[in-house]
Structures are given as C-alpha cells and as structure tokens.
Length: 256
Image (tube, rainbow, N blue to C red):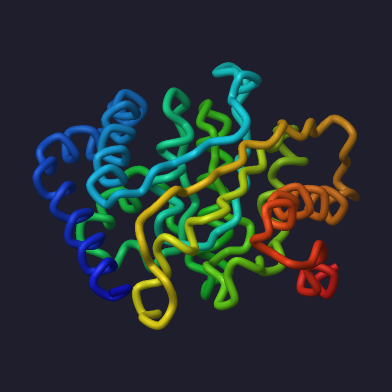
C-alpha cells in the first residue's frame, strides 16, 4: 500500500509539472520572471497536494513577515514533501530554497534548482561555500532564503539531525531575523523514495509557523547559541504533539 501511494504521488507530481511545462519554462528560465512566478508556483503546489489528498493545517501566522526585510527561514527536513509545503506556507512571499544537489538529478525538478533555487553539494566544500555565497547575494537582493539546517533528510525521522552552522553564521553576518518552521507530519505522509517499509499515506499535514527570532541580541560569537535556540524552537511542537517522546536531541548536544 505504501509503495503504491509513493508511485501515485510521484506520477501525479511529474504529470502536473509536465502539463504546465510551457509556463514553468517561462517563469524559471528568465530571472526577471522568478518573483512574478510565485503565485504560479503556489498554484502548482496546491494542485499537487490536492490531487494526492494531503491537507495542510497551519498553526501560527506570517503577519510579522515584511517584504522590505527578508528572513532566513529554517525548517526541519523530514520528507520530499517539505518543498511543496513551503510553497503552501509562503503564499505571498518570494523565497529561494537551499536544497541538496541530488535534486538536480530528478527530471523536471532539475529546472527549479538549475535556474532558480540553490543546490548545495555537501560532498564538496568549495561547492557548498559557493552555494552559501549565492544565497547571501540573493538575500541581499530581497529574497527570503529557506534553509534546512540538517542538510539532508535524517534516516531516523522525525528525530532531527544536528544542525549545521551555515544558516546561523549567515543570519548573524547579514543581521537577518530567523523564522523557524516545524513540519509535524510530512515524514508520515511521504517517506524517502528508497524507503518502502515505512508509512506513506495521505492525510493532514500539520505545520507550525513560529514567532520570528530577532537577530539583534546575537553576535558572531553566538552561532551555537542561536543554532540551539532554533533547534529547540523547531523541536518543541514535536514533543508537544507527541511526534517525539523526548525533549532533547542527543545529536544536537554532541554537535555542540
């Protein structure tokens, strides 16, 4: 049953992108159209979620998100569903996603990460630095930047991996506030493609939009402090809603 749903989800996802390919090409292959395409990308994500019977349920709001002050958005990474869900959350705000370079190997997804979003090759230090430089430039151009600080989907979801420092170093350097987001159910709705033994079924996908964390009180010596603050903020609802049984991540403590 789980494998059948994964096949259905993947088929639906790629069929939707294929049908809309001409508009995708228009919005993705010309940089001047990237921000104008935001509503179209939201529409595509909504369509995929509806057709695959996944219903986002949001807690919190984006009232404090101001177009003139871009944010660094940090979310837990538990599923390939995270990317369409980000579009479901940010319906009015323009953003770029730092995603693992492996996504460029997927047909059609390559369009997004080769022409608009920012692929990160974790196996190459030089490429990783180059991606962060590109993210910094995009941030300075007024884009919100979405980063998954774990760097990849953990093998033990929903428990998070230790966060990497890059997002928090950039936040402090750019004096950028951070917006934490918690995806509670994405790991339950759609597991990784090569994991056929765990549950992947349609249903409600809860997402918690936290209060913005102001950067004013943090200096370049506070990277670990800020990282821990964001980690605990994201992890909190997982404990509150029973997704995790413990309130501390041993991996994050070991990283520190």
